[in-house]
Image (cartoon, rainbow, N blue to C red; front, side, top):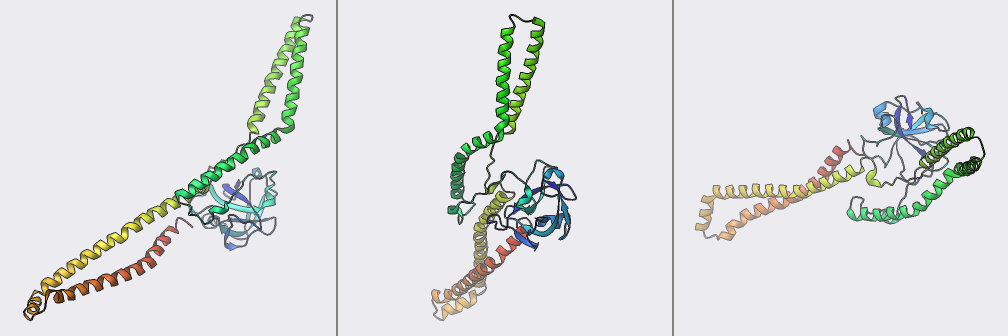
Length: 329
């Protein structure tokens, strides 16, 4: 849909009070309660300057119950987790700027144009695993088999009386041609030629009308899963990269800590050679002397590991999430 003061391409949805899927998260205001109210994407507020109480107007081509609505809220949607991308459209400049929700009855649709399907067995599965994707592919394949017959039935329903009328005209035209052939043996050749031209013209128009009807009413379905949502696949790829980095960082820091500890103990031993010699002269064994330095290394290693694990787990994830909040919700 095209709407707003900047005539932007907008992803428009119908809001239902008991909506169970893709529930909106309010950032301010409230959800639609009456027919003249609308909720906009939070991005419409931050990037395009809309405010609560403003009037939002759609283009006539939207064919809604009414063109103007009062903005009563701004929200986030789980379908749009990328702060920058809202997908593409075949209107406007081809780029969806933000989404909007109006009461479902305002859409004035004869049939539903979007169906969200949720599979109970996959509710707790990790979306970014190969196992999940394989199960989704199986479910989508099963749905396609079900909707294959539905597409044919829907096409027949859309063509309906128009196709029946075209077929009737075709039969009448065929009969006229047969009658013309029979009259050709007895009638005026000039008059018959004119009638033949007229029938040929009518046949061409009828064929064109039939082709146009079949092309315009052919029912097709577009299938999408979560990976097709704006930014969803990028979010998964970013998570995988962070997981790979998380596997490398501990090893890297451990090697640095081991190197520092080794260097420190070595220097301590070199600087205390005189004391070590004195201890040996007094009868202390190597183990008793080494135990002092080993204890220091063990204490430093254990305390560093504990503190590093606690501080790292508490601070690094928060830092990474804070950085990604600028891109993802």
